Image (cartoon, rainbow, N blue to C red; front, side, top):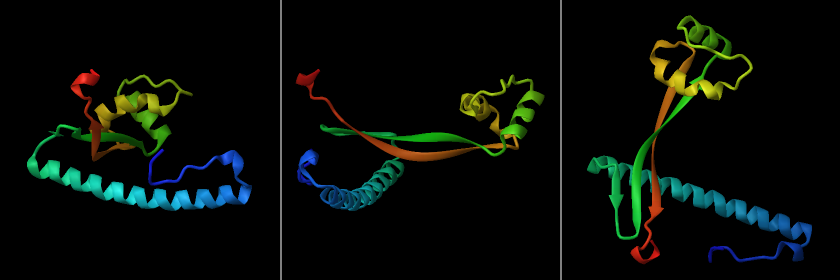
Amino acid sequence: MSNLIEPVVIEQLKPFEIAEQVVKLQSVKKEVDSRLKEMKASLLETTKSLDVLTLKTGSYTISRATRSTVKVLDKKALSKELESMNVEVVYGMDMDYMKPVVKKLVDDLDNAEVNETEYVSIRINKKKEDK
């Protein structure tokens, strides 16, 4: 575990002590999540300003990508729209299965939209002797 959080043996704690640890960890997580969000936003802006999709150092690879999310506004109306376009819709199936099809057709659909979110991911590079 991280050196930022002191290790505990849960089995040796009383319920109120566990609750106290949970509250402390939630507080730390909230702060860490906030800092991570700020730092990733900074890296995203850096990759945009440099007009690069990937930055590689000796230790890390930073990649910028776009995540597309299909949002179905009205499932029944969307099913009717797709059927009118001769796209087979199997009733009872999860609409998530249809999202790739909807994504391709979304400009022609009234009951779905695509939200795109840019983000960065960071990977630790493997050392040559680790390969």
